[in-house]
Each structure stands twice: as structure tokens, then as C-alpha cells.
Length: 281
Image 1 (cartoon, one colour):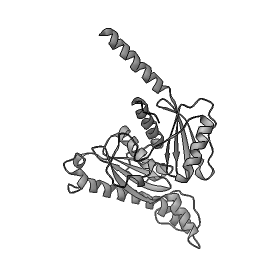
Image 2: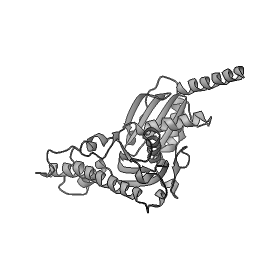
Image 3: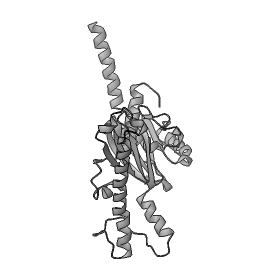
Image 4: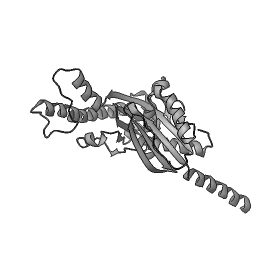
């Protein structure tokens, strides 16, 4: 028995060593930016960010073992797949709401859910526990909700800050394109400060209102998902991510933590789960 015990311990250690030394390239392809994250095991070694409109690829000298992608730009997927294989010698795995492991999705139209949203929900669930709300300040500002049972319930999609700023400038005759930053006072004394107030303080107020409404809804005993569940009395953690998260979170106290690498971490954990189960990706 001792022989077999030691043998299996060696096998498990060897498999663990292999997983912990795998060079994994994670790719978050969004509407505004494409972000590459290079992991050695669980450690994020390097990160690159480029505009999606002019995709570039990082010069990586080390050999890449696996590539995993969350994409919300379907028209770029084929060319991205070809380029990644050509440059790094790996066929990438695209994560979708249909194939993500370890996250039960309580929605009928699963195909409609963005890959980045379920990856963020998965990462928040694994890193911070449930119930949890993820607020992602990207091209769109999204809110994604995971119940106390670890079920993805859905969420909210609102226009992002940069998008709102750009549309106001493009669709009006006199409103300038302003820098997104907080003015000294909420009440603007000129057009620029009034716009900045609406963008920064307005979005902070929107986040506060949406978080309050989401929490009230999932704590409502009549809410279908919560019938006889733990969500009713649980603390609901709120995680923020995305480029403008740090700015908006300065002006609200409803966010518990900012995690700018949430999507990349989620992709790494999904890949690790697949390796551990000896699934090919």
C-alpha cells in the first residue's frame, strides 16, 4: 500500500508541477481594446494592451503552451485564431457562456451573453465568493450577478463613460469632447465642468442606484431565484474592473474591491480547471 501511495503522490506532484509551469497566453478581446496576459502557472508575468481597431501582437520570446480567449468581437475571431497559431504555434480556445466550466447559467438565451461577462462572473465567484456583483467599466458599463448558490443570474448593460462622452460630442452642435475627470464641484460653472460632472458624478450615482436596486431585487423573498436560498441574508460583495473603475470608485462607497486583472485571472483559472481535468483546450 505504501508503494502505491508514494507512486500516486509522485504522479500528482508531477502533474501539479506541469500545470504550475505551463506558459499560458490569455486574450481579452473587447470592442475598444485587446489585452494579452502571459501567465506562468498562476502568476501573471506580463500584460499588453492595444486598440482593437489596430490589433498588435506581443513579441514573446518564450514558448507558449496554451492560449485561451474571451472575445466579444466575432468578426475578428477568425483572423485572431490564424495569427495566434502562426505566431505562437497554438490553436486558441475561445471561452463562451456555453462552454465555461464551473458556472451554472440560469438564463435561456445563453448564446447572447458576452464571454467577458461570464469570465468576470466566474473569476469573481472563485476569488471573492458568492453572492457577488461585478461592475465592468468598459465600452459598455455592465453589472453581472452571481447568486449565493454560485449561479449566474444575468445583469445590466448601460452605455460606457467614453462612449457616452463621444456620442454627446458627435450628436450635438456645441458640446466639446472633454477629458473624463472629476471637476471640483458637482454643479458645473461652464460647459466643460458640467459635462465632466455628468460623466463622473453621474456615473457614480448610476452605479450606486443600480447596486442598490440589484441588491434589493435579489434579496426580495418573492424573487424566483432566491426562493429558499441563502442570498436573502448574505453579504453581497461588489467587485469593479475595467479602465475607468479606479476613477469612478473614488466617488462612491458601494464598491468593495477593484480588480483590474479580473478577466485575465478568470481566463487563467478556466484554463487551469481544464488542465486539471485533463481536458484539451
